[in-house]
Amino acid sequence: SYGGYDFAYKCPKVIVCDGCRVLEETNKQEEKKDETVSQHKGNGPTPPKVSRKHANVKQALRNGIATQTQAERYEEFKIALQALCTNANTTSTSDNSSKPSPFQNTTVVTLPTRHGYGFALRHALQYCVT
Image (cartoon, rainbow, N blue to C red; front, top):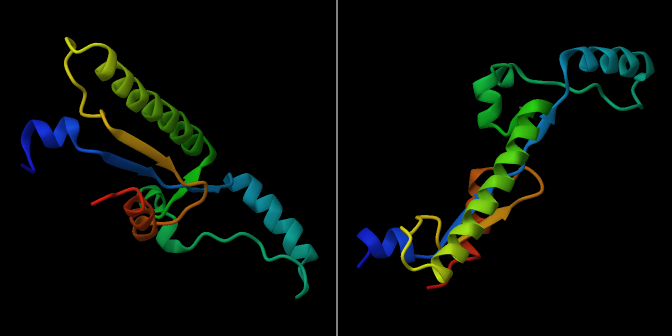
């Protein structure tokens, strides 16, 4: 059976948390740009750029670009998710009278850097056993 109770509670699941690139604050970018432009005469590092398609906050998040605050919140979310999944596994094995959690049998994998959807999915498939 591929649905219902067995799927939601007993099926092994993998949640992959992709990494993100942290976008520097606007003022810091302008300061760095001034420094690097004055130093950049063809050999030094190029100033950090944000393309127009990533200028929109929603679009930037879709592409794995977050502000420092968003990245910190994402780290907190990943820690809470890991705790939720760990508690769901320990609660389900020790206390059979409690309501089962859909996070039972869930593995949380955190990628250290931004991989994107396709490569994150490929990484998750390594945990699947048929």
